[in-house]
Length: 250
Image 1 (cartoon, rainbow, N blue to C red):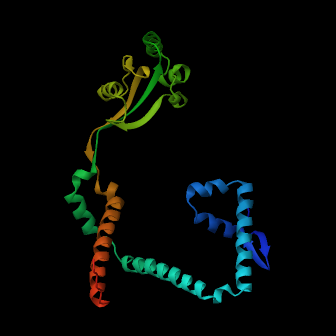
Image 2: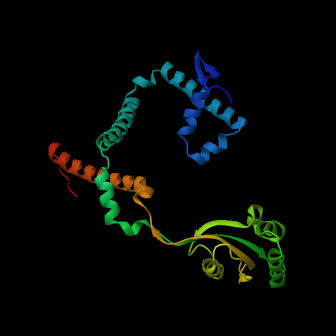
């Protein structure tokens, strides 16, 4: 990786560095920025930055900055930037106290209920008889993970059939019903779904519970701040209407 101060181009003595490329990329939509991640993409960006510098030199050479149309456009852009800057300044002082966070948590505890969830692995095959044969092999000592890697047609076979943790409503009904009714470490009978026949092994089950305030503190903090910022914004605008002699005729 190059140093961010690496000079990639020079236009009339002005250096364009790798840092300039990073700064330009940071202003783009991430999906668009990804298109310039290759060496060829970086080269295209550098050329665009060079083009921009040449256009600036040409504009200054022709005193475009002194034209009235430019000055009007500059004032419009400046006004829009100032509006956004003013909003940020007005709202930047808003914060959430620990008492407000605790109050929000107590008043909205139903929002922080974590539903029952399980973590399960499975082996998927096309035929019932094949599922029974694999079940017998597992009972005879073959590990579930090895069996999944050897027989399963699901991409999860690459991780021993592990499907991760999931709540109710995330899997097809037949699979979900079987998984949630297993005991930890238990292997199911073949379960038929639209995808084929599954052997399911339950790794663990987490009962429904209320998340602790420590688990959701940051989430609550942001919600409280957003609500207070909205209130502050509208209150400030009402105050400004009186200060700046506003008349709305619609």
